[in-house]
Image 1 (cartoon, rainbow over the protein chains, first blue to last red):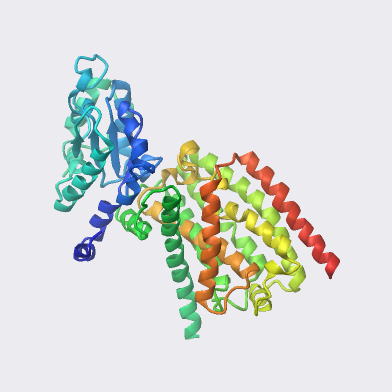
Image 2 (cartoon, rainbow over the protein chains, first blue to last red):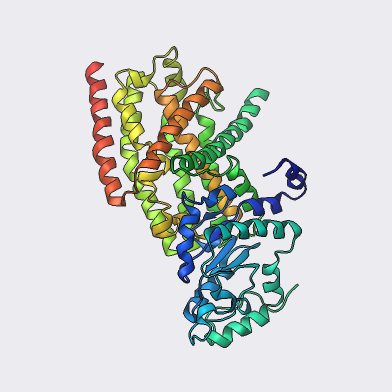
Length: 184
Length: 296
């Protein structure tokens, strides 16, 4: 929060609100979750950035994918992502969602998460330090400010691509399509 | 007439500002107790701005109307509560009306949640109604004691009778005051009694399907609820206030005590909560009623 921001607050209150009030949802997709409790509790205190954990996807607008994503978890990841209200942002945490990491030859782990849901940013490392989450959050702020964090729009526009990729891995999906077709 | 209209519009606005300020202070004090820096004090306002700019999901007309009913119940209740010498609906209402309207907020949430059709909501709602059943018994006894002692059902008269530092907390009514303070966390839904919206057990209970502006309205309801519970305690037992500033200072003291209770205690189970509420506050308030009957 800065005095310089007052002009922006008057101009685009919604955008600034989204920026400074990121409600994060995550679940134990992998070992990355071990870095999250220190981040939200006394040691690193994410609440001073406005980042708090919430219990349900309906209330969240930041999705942290912490660690490798197995095929079974991918289903839950997609469903959680589709339930979040727009605008929403996703951050892949650790090297496993980026390119498989140490599970590069695993038969049951997906290698590139951004084929299945759109990702706004990555935190590389195995494991990244908790400070890296703050770097990611502040970087996300600049992206939101410039209007570049638009992965959720990409998901709407190229829904067919993502849905096809999802069905390639999971077989026939037992929930209806979120969007009818590719829409602008 | 003009003053009355200003009061009717101003009272919920004032309650909203104080409630939201309390929400911010709540998070701030909790952070300091846990040795954290904590969010800025305006964080709830930032959250509200964000939530009202988000795309919320609706599950049907009752889902929309229930939350509005809950909000309306809270706003009507605020109009009956004296706030440091000013009370929007002075000549009507009274403790009995307050007792009835206090159930509007949970019922509205229950209606709204029923449309949501999520099992977590059903559990949360049933817990909320059971908890309300738990604290209504001592609450009713406390109000009965007050009405017998002051021989009136008007809350404005009760406040006026306590002017010049004749606070009910330091009169024969002290047992009722203690009982009310013991059920105050249950009325406000803070920690020994935050079984209703437990995030770890039932994914924040009734709020599980709320997103966007619905969650914003839910937060505003919560802020109003904080204001109502504490303002009632100040009015009934701490003598109201000569002007809004002294009233606000008294509210602040009670609120900070409640936050300390929230910080220290772990969450109870629902049957433990009912056991506590029907045992200790109920017995103490009953003793207070008997004491008043003997004194008269």
